[in-house]
Image (cartoon, rainbow, N blue to C red; front, side, top):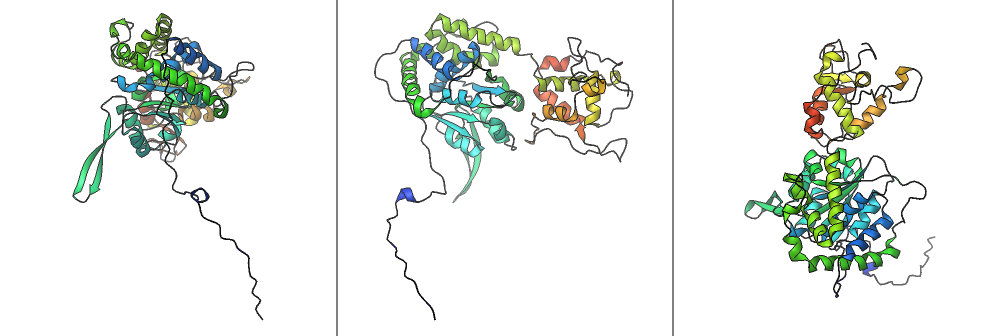
Length: 431
């Protein structure tokens, strides 16, 4: 015997809100409200003060963020739009919040992550958007050479990339504009990005705030109205001074700011000139600091510099014939012999310990330093089990010299490549 149970059901109307859209949603760019009145140059100080409430860092960092955000509102006034890069060696230094604070001051902008080349081209197609890309290192670690190229070409007002489309009449080549103001951030992103993009970027080195230094947490539910109020007046002030900014006399720029540097600094100096002498002095300090730091070595770059020196002065480091590869442990011991320009052996005393062998840089530490670099294939530089040229049975994991030298040539400043005269201390370790 079969029993049928009736189920009471009530017809519920289907609405758009009750249906999940599995295809995603289009998002409109962030917009600043229009401001009707006149605005004087004190608004630049207000922008600076607002940013300092939410971003811990130096005055030069604040200057870069304040003036670059202004430029991002009107980047189409300039032939070149430089990039703004937020970088740090560790997490939790406030990079994302710093970018978010800047983005809330920029009209017609997007805050993004995990950006593909196709998405980038679509956002920049009209040449009027500013993009803030978080975790850029992840975006560039997927073999996305197209994204690197778009970042470079998109600095110029005529920047574009060609693509082939299939239509009813066969193939046709179409151009996608890439012109856009772009800010990005990520851990060690300065070491990850290619040298061409690095030299076209204004860098904001972030550091972790100590107790009592931490800025206010940015909560858009509470702070968005303030950012929109200040941002709208900043945008109005920029538009009021369009002629003066567009026609800025580049002869006012410091004499050392030439070539590509001049193109990169022009928008910031043009805005600072209208803002007043205080801002001119502040942006000059940033430009001079960049000049002072242009030859400065980060931990990652110093490791490449040491490897470059070891290769070119091999006879000072080893009595053995040079192989096509170096096992990672062997490379650590070679690095321990390297002497820097101050006469120190940084990799011989990289760790605390009593025994000298315990103080040497360790394999895991070296692979972490070199792993921040991206190969032309879009992969992180890593150890592999390459076969030795001299011993076919030697399959220890290590690095090929050709890969290490390629990274050095791509990332080291020219002065570091031309000078490898610091000889090692042969008494440290014998082969």
